[in-house]
Image (cartoon, rainbow, N blue to C red):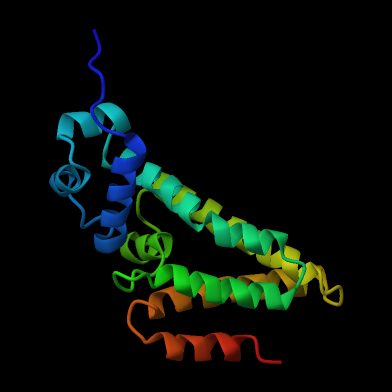
Length: 186
């Protein structure tokens, strides 16, 4: 007979996500996950299969946490103003009250590079493409740019967003706000 779980998976994944966000994927050990999640290694493997499985569930948790600002951008009808607001919202999200975390996914890319775990990279690319698609939708609202220009501009904004999240781990908010303002200067 299977034993009943004595923990809430959503709660333990939230704790794991915070640990990965703080320490990075490679730097987080299963022992640290045990301690942070409050469950033993057997339970981790039984519920999530592996450290990678815990991380992939953590990515889903992260995407839920950020959904309020991605949905705001997806519903925006303000073109560049909507994208600029997304940058401000993302900055607030990435600089929480406990410290300057940056973005879990961008932190992970910076840590593992393109030679890292393909399943993890695949999840990161899906998220990246989703954000770029939101930028494209907002740029299309302007109505004066070619498809090629819009694609290039969306790539530019996504790379600028990556720079913002890395900078948010080091620089004061006022300096990063200057970056946002200059990025969207006419």
